[in-house]
Length: 415
Image (cartoon, rainbow, N blue to C red; front, side, top):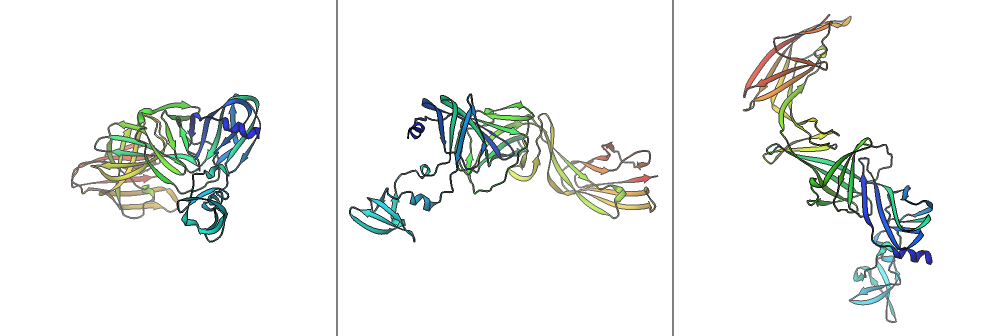
């Protein structure tokens, strides 16, 4: 009894922090305080997804601890928990005696007993959480009135998405924090780790509900620091992460010049056997002002969605190039004019290809063609078209006027 009474002396938890990783796991840190010092603590409302053997305390030592798991508590368990308690029937307080089958319950009104339909009664404000709590019971080495503790919890993670506006040259980044546990967290400081850590766990799927974007948590509250081998984003703002829900927080807002270009990659001419035609892809490029966390980027122009791309974990001050759409009005056609190969020696070949680049749009476009082909003392290329050679690729820059066509040929030889 003495042990149970000690648990009533807790006051509110303060200075809560959470570190969320991209591996769908989080570390939660909190501090609790008692009115009287004790070497026994009971912590309630521990989520089912807690990694129990990750539990830690600070400035003290755990001698032993136990974990009571909270079972799945359905509506019938909840209603059974009112047996022997007062409920409301026809605006009158009665006592619930027994929960029967077929959604009927036995009640006592004064000295009379009778069955009523479950839908006809109202339950008073008892908290069913008190009947089957998930809890950690700790026995500490030293008696204390303040305990700081932490634990790992699965199924809390985050993903990032970006909105890019080509008209305003603006880039905004948001994190989508998903909490698939059965616990609500009130956080005063939130850390987001950029980078994957080594961590293995079984996956679980739950239904979730979406929360509105936290407009009061803007990128001005976000600070970034280097931590160990990772990048750490810190949000110094009170945030409530609701159970089985998703919360959105703005972490990046930048304005920088965004340029558009058109690129196409063609196969190695050594293995070109027939004529073909291919469309160019449209890319946008900009310089990152801070580290970008991996996630999807959606691109808009004139308030119209025009495409999306995937951003990898990217350092700051890096030129980021994103493939957002295929341009149906800009294409290149390959016509094989000559194809000679030595069947006994594949290093000997003589191939001539005619390239026809067509711009059917009403806009001037700068484009590049990438052709994988190694130039060395055994392989060569001849053409009147200007090109660059980099990383074993022939790069052909082109400026195409509106509604125009450009044609050139290239000869590839191996000896």
